[in-house]
Image 1 (cartoon, one colour):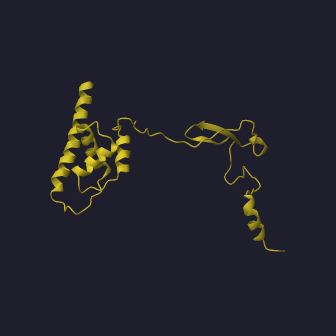
Image 2 (cartoon, one colour):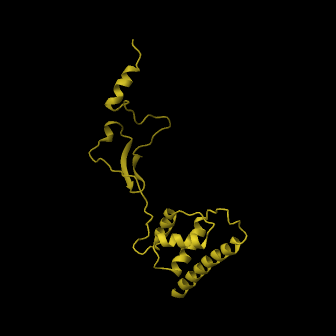
Image 3 (cartoon, rainbow, N blue to C red):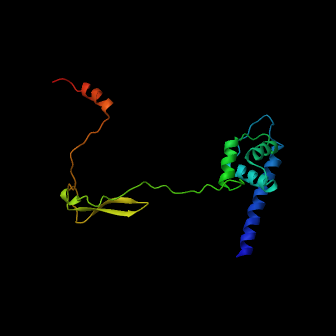
Length: 169
């Protein structure tokens, strides 16, 4: 297993070096006055190569070295910082975890849904899906299972405008 991981890591490093080498070869044919916005993959490959050669450099110096190495690139320090942090290449930083964000949802246990309809019940599925109504009986097509009166809530500063827009009778 360890040999496979080493081989994969070596291929990734080789592929990264190849991308950077291809770019360095192509840079000879680019007009120096042209500005290039590198792709995320190419920028990531260049930053990985720079940080592996100079692991002690901070964000600002890595960014400066990047612009020295690739003078036609237009890259902000903010973009450099984000990529370095995301890849875990900053000495005092940690990789930003990609955490899934779910809406908060809870069931009100003392809510009696049966006073509106006996055909459904409230069910909490999980953190990702949340809660919902589930049929407890067969529901025919077109059958009304829930009816409620409309409710309007507006801030106090809005009410005079709302009232003044109602035509006089």
